[in-house]
Image 1 (cartoon, rainbow, N blue to C red):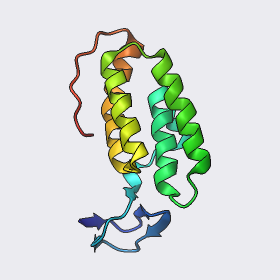
Image 2 (cartoon, rainbow, N blue to C red):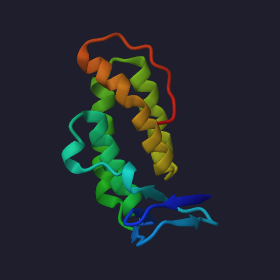
Image 3 (cartoon, rainbow, N blue to C red):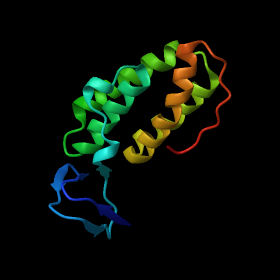
Amino acid sequence: MKISLRAGERIYINGAVLRVDRKVSVELVNDVMFLLEGQIMQASDATTAMRQLYFIVQLMLMNPTDVRDASALYGQHHAALVAVCESREMLDGLVAIDELVGATRYFEALKRIRALFPVEQAILAGVATDIPFEAA
């Protein structure tokens, strides 16, 4: 996989933070967990239940050598969401997310969570949802 970065941009790879000083392309030749700076959610932006779930999974991806605490928090938060959620769309998404997290496929789980943001927003706004899942 080839990734292009702009000067000053950061990328998080297997828990390490890399910042480049000029425009550069990086080729990842093996299987790594990474996040681009633009995909990082700040704690202050985790203002809804699904955004909080995203933030927790993001922590698991960014610090793969120490996921114990984040994993426990994920389990509690995920279980609470499943317990209160009435939307079939959200429940199906939460099941898929749990499978991805269980398989340590955190990046794919983050994509699935992002795809549920509009569904969650519609639920919070009191609008019936019929939004298909799409990768964000």
